[in-house]
Length: 357
Ligand SMILES: [Zn+2]
Image (cartoon, rainbow, N blue to C red):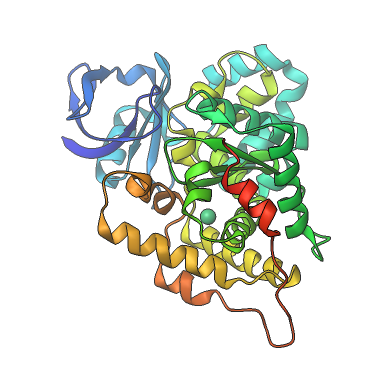
């Protein structure tokens, strides 16, 4: 019996298409981008209880960072028949490990959280303590921080604070956030857990006005407001995520493959972030058509399939925040009677363009 699946190898930050086959000594994983390997059935664990209509996500005790995602239901069901503990429910062995780490007194609380996180990641994201969210944000940032320079000098930090404060004008209910710029090889912006927002230098290079950057920032603040990053990590990593944060030690999740790839949101999440951005921009009197133009430009460039230069990695942002005509159409200009105020003065905009030197 065989099927196609997605495989995170625990080493590089993206998933691979693989084929899976049940062989006498386990589950054989192969594909053009991975070294063939066999996972023993006894070592398999389900990342979350199996649910109809959802992919089965598996880990293996011998390869802590790696994940397999199986979408074909008949294959997943056959696997669960052979390895009944994959069907879900607390894994006693893992529960024992957890108890040893954090002590039995916290176990009851964790059991409740376990049930909650398996069935309501979005709700759980709102009860995570801020210190846990910050810890998660630190770990996600650590997973890519080595890939490029953090553009942080006292003047660049002051500029980012000016831009952030501009967005917050007349938005007293906006969530706290911290903006950072990295010089990475990709064009993208990310909302990390704990209210941290990362933009890449290439994104700022690609924007033609401060309004466009402000629009993207407002969109990311929408993801922060809805805690999409926290929910998505909980969804993808399940109880192991809690184990990592609560134990505060052991393997860092920053070694987990595909952390940034995981921060890929659903269409509903994208719509929520867009609608938040629209409101925020109108309140701050920043013209939302900047965001519209930026999205239109991304969409055009993606169609060209340019494979080099600045826009060679243009599709990065499309893969984590896919832009559709529906999303572009939903962005409206400032309403009658609201006069746009500039996002930044010319000096600050020129400074932002040179933020990474
Ligand atoms: Zn988004």
